[in-house]
Length: 318
Length: 123
Image (tube, rainbow over all chains, first blue to last red; front, side):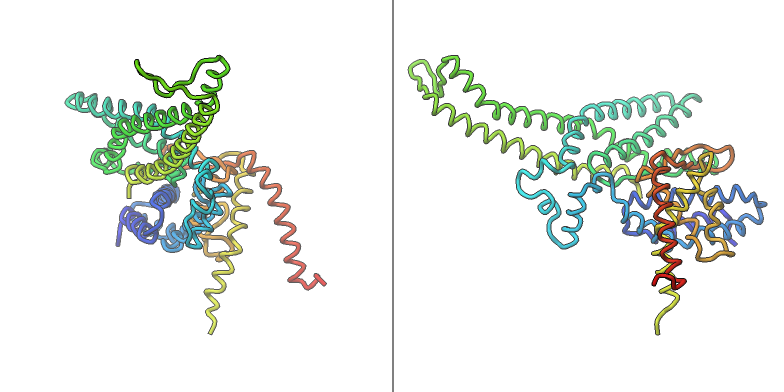
């Protein structure tokens, strides 16, 4: 006869197995819900220690078979796509991809369709703010680890270490919400479940040696260089594009003021353009600016998609 | 031979998809205080042996709660309990209460229609 604890662990393992292949975030949510329910039920039934596993078996019967519950999550998940996927264009894209054609091409056709895609703007905003979030994450991760290591020899070091490690997980969860909101990658909607009935030593061990804690920490560290690159890339490209786009205005100003527009000017030689030549050239330069700006938008959307996958790999544990 | 058991199951699943949402939203809108999943399961009597097939299993109400929350009809908060694990408490939002009024209207129309058809009064 299994103990109640073993039954819960077996149930969760079965549920996880039944959800194999499903979105990692869905699996985490489903396991958190199930574990909360089973433990709460066990607590509320108030059975004697020896009758606990029998009481729990009844609770599990009422909760439903793992296969059945897994199916319920998959059904509802299909009906509730992530934040950005709810836009009409994204729904069209989903239909299009179901038909076997490239989703992005269908829903936002052409080179300039990228401006209408909310993921583009989400990606752009994410890349611009990542220099701030990245700096904060990095500072906190480094401060946390070094402070914890420094005071570990003292009694007071233990609670400080626990607080920092817990904060890493909390920040990872919040970053997940940010990633889902801006980049449209489905991330957990529930913080991962920590079993409070385990003795604190066990919980500390899970916290200290758990993959989730250290992958979150690694993510926080990596976000500084990544954030710097994202921010610099976006600011440089956008500034360049805007500068080029503004060139006709500059030329017009020079012509109005009577300033000659030179194209080559050295000590011995200079070649001036006529006003019409200058305007034509500046229009060509502006067109180049528009192409660079649009290319930057494509880059933002692409980076957003890749970053979503990266965040999921590090922040959502199996 | 037709597998009637499977057909019954399929019919029940399709029927319950909307009604469970309505029932859960209604329970949470009527409740004066936020409720957690286990309490809600007890209230709807989900999965008990006396009324098999009326409602879904208790475990299946959680994805529905999550879906309703995703649509902004419910809000939830995770709170520590004195004994046992932390629990997620759900309550209806203002949008949820508004939706409930409309849904209740849809439900009674549907019910009348189906009752009429089943009773043979539709002609």
